[in-house]
Amino acid sequence: MVIERTDKEVIIRLPATVDIEDLQEFVHFARYKELTSKFRVDQEEVDEMASSINAGWWKEHGSQHSK
Image (cartoon, rainbow, N blue to C red; front, side, top):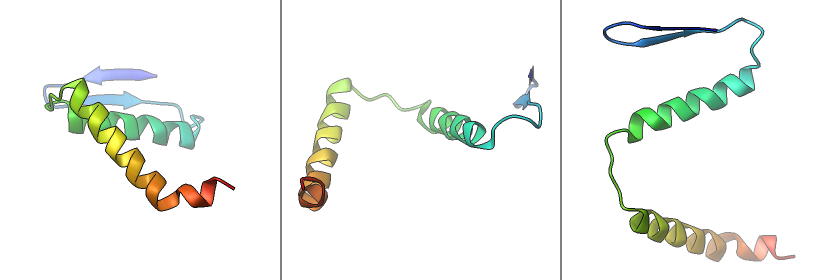
């Protein structure tokens, strides 16, 4: 693996033998970090949002998974 930094970007060179699924997970994580790098949110807000999303998911899908 070779990592190179230029003025405008970081270049990562990997051997062709790298598992594509693992590489895709890494790319998704890198994209997430890029998109969220300028956001600042309190943990309490994150917890509230997660709770709301979970409650909505269980309301919609709960009966399908409780068998």
